[in-house]
Length: 117
Image (cartoon, rainbow, N blue to C red; front, side, top):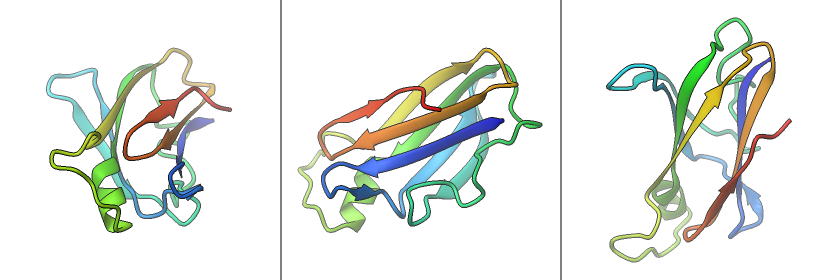
């Protein structure tokens, strides 16, 4: 099925349209950049999947969400240094035939994630 993400801005109660996201494989050191993107109006990857079912492999990955850059672009005044800059989510894929959905709920001061469906 592949790998997908969805980011919701809990401060504004809306999808995090325009947030920059990077996906890395962490099987090697340094990690290997696999994809960079900007989230669409729904807070998702425009291609649908970050990695499709033929590209997703068993292993470890990192999603990097540019939280501070996103909130600055929304004219949110952040302290210096800001509380959250980039949110790094390290996760593992044990069965590449399954769908791995990694949502992020985020504000300038907190975030939550889980394995979605």
